[in-house]
Length: 130
Image (cartoon, rainbow, N blue to C red):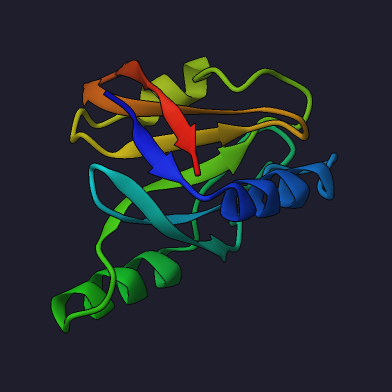
């Protein structure tokens, strides 16, 4: 079973990744376990954004606050691997919490979706465009 995403949204995220060949982009995903409804870019505040990503904590807090007052539900995040593949890296695995969050990993040309299923572990999730 996969999760749906509009081709328009997916292309927008791929274009964002393509436009940043020197640094990882990142942002938040909103929706449900059936569908990614939206994505919001966030600043990458990692000390070395060419090799890591860290979503700006202010963006995370704002998303959680908005969800508590009826806003969209955050289901995970996205980030890019500018010179790699859309497969979780060792650094990604170190950050995986096993909380069921979705991780959309992008290159300039490809996107793959993963779900954090255990500390340090992911499972692939089919990404179905509509």
